[in-house]
Image 1 (cartoon, rainbow, N blue to C red):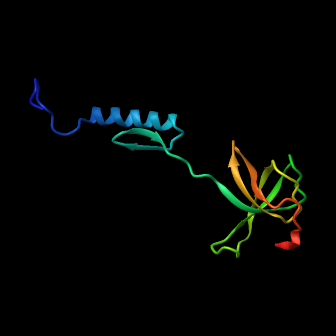
Image 2 (image 1 turned 135 degrees about the vertical axis):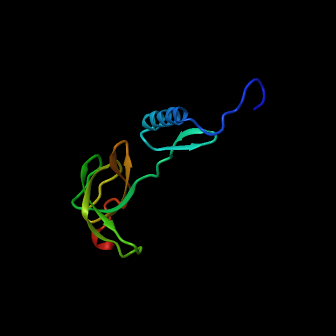
Image 3 (image 1 turned 45 degrees about the vertical axis):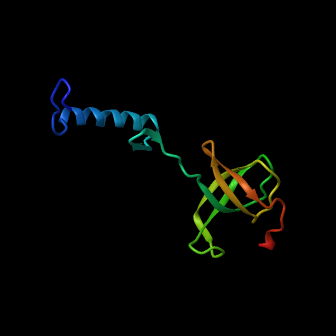
Length: 123
């Protein structure tokens, strides 16, 4: 930059501290998860949190009940984990032992896919 002044080589610690502080402020404003690139600072899109589970007892429409979570590396070979989730059932009645897919919605878990009133012995 030759116009009206000289360009300083390198970054001063004051400038770096200023930028670092601003990035920390923006990060906090976006919940700590931001993407920084040449175009600006943007909140990262969070992946949807979904889980595979089975109902532990009859789970009526409009009820919140415990659902056991299943995990595994191979499809079809999932096993019950040591975790369970309280999930809201917005759709239809579900018998004990029905497979369901859960998704985190508005700071809580909901059944988003399931087989209402299917026989638990069918799968």
